[in-house]
Image (cartoon, rainbow, N blue to C red; front, side, top):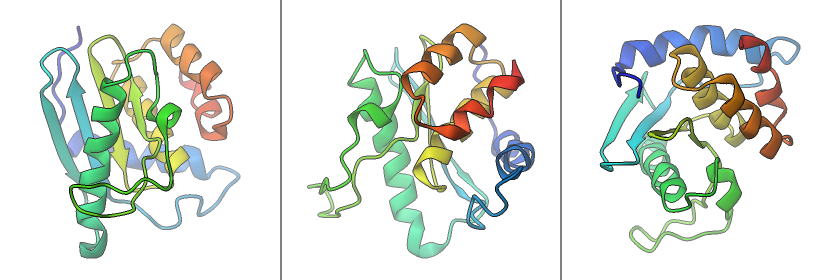
Length: 165
């Protein structure tokens, strides 16, 4: 098991190379977004660490914080899934707050111990960002990433991460 030592700085520092990689050939793919909510869920305890990245616009903060946590918890409830995308429902209304925010991709089971989730970018980029973090900080091995890539072959941004191994 990898040491879980994540700080806001570590996640924010990963934004720069991630954006450079994703925007290569696709300028402004992130639509100017550079903030969000990052969650790590320990599937065995189930302890959650949530980190706010940069300053989320006030009108989006509640949504991003809620959805990042929801993605991770939903993936934990589906042990055969590698991605929260596998249980997405874009029309879902949350009873706890009566919001039709939907259930989205953006959480990845990065190894047997942890789920990483992010909310703040477009859905497929949320998913790619958590994989990027898991690869950069050595939470995910190449063979596990290949399983995710095979199952999520419709996410073109994951393909860009292949060369990181």
